[in-house]
Image 1 (tube, rainbow over the protein chains, first blue to last red):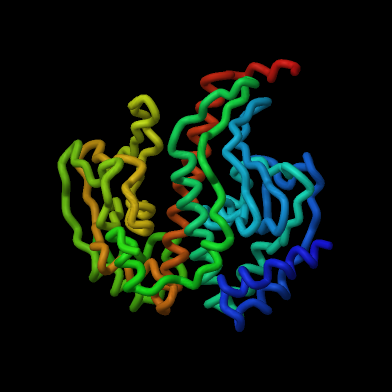
Image 2: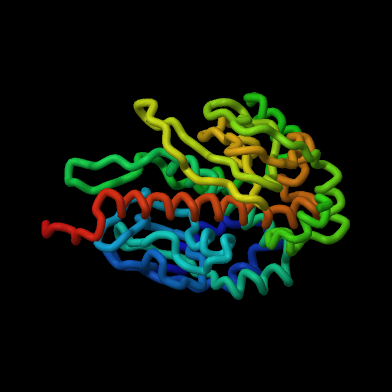
Length: 184
Length: 160
């Protein structure tokens, strides 16, 4: 079933990386199901992999003792684990919990680095997608949290980028300048 | 210290060649700024990439209701201004000098070539951008944990 979820998203992944760069990535990822309510990673604990949501939803929360702040949800096409990797800290920056039965693809950091040596363009494009996701998350978490009617603290923002946007080929210079100046 | 040597000392520059570092350094201009100088205004478009060489810069945000709070303090070796510059959207925070500072800046036109992953140097510069954004998010999450500690202290969560 999980392989089916991966297969169904191959077009988006292929758009993102380019057809000749998809196989080296697929060779290195494994797929898993995270049951609803299960914790994929716990805030501040060591981690060694990225996870890509294939189907379902993952909820993110920063924690301190028994309390937490819900940051939002990751939808299909979005990854987690990039903060731990690119900050060099190698510890989870939030607790990641499956909001429903969720299928994920797992890419270990060591395999990402191996991919860097084998196919730097695939890593480059994947990193560009991570950059887009981190900018979205910075934007979403700039506001301080509010307290919901149940007394839980949460951030009002949208953490996820639709896969359709991530799947676009890196835009060219002209498109970038047009976007910069508000053109369409 | 020469800008080139400073750049070479940054961990995020590990994948850039000496030639890459020369190109990045050549595209940046180093200047000193007084206390309280504002580099980026919240809700306004930022058009430069900045790198703090010396001093401290406070990053603040006017939240809903107009309440101001500090998101983080930028230390030497950190880039700032990336999200607004990359997305072509108004900045979500204000960046202001906290004391006299020395800052290197790169114009949008040069950053454009580095942000796009289509060129060799752009490909290698992706790691620099990703590393800074990861640090910014990591610092933000730390600030949220401190907020939790201020609100709840060590109190256990009440039973539902």
